[in-house]
Length: 166
Image (tube, rainbow, N blue to C red; front, side):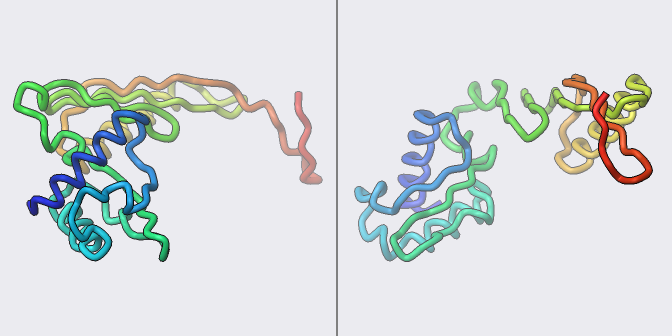
């Protein structure tokens, strides 16, 4: 990886540590200690994407030099030593949370079910499909998929398409 890309990534990780966010926007002036950052920014982003430290969504988004940053797990752990790489990483995603430790994953999924469905059957189906999808896409071994029912939707549609709440 290029030296300026490493400096850029270190600054991104410092910002991430102070905000707790994996996706954010920064202006290139935040990186003013990198020589010629305003002209090298595209090469730096390409380098970090090719090294799987940022997703391909990371890009310069306007003429003022604002940059959309989207970190990957490899980017977050790029500078960690082996001991730290074996520790757990937690990702919060829409509808749940994924905890990754070494080669294993524990997943928590939050759902709202429709009134009248059989919750154990729905929960088992979600567990099965999420486990299979994550293992297939990532190669991780999923040790747990916990389904948390956050509520029950009791809105019922009448035949005239009006909604009645019970």
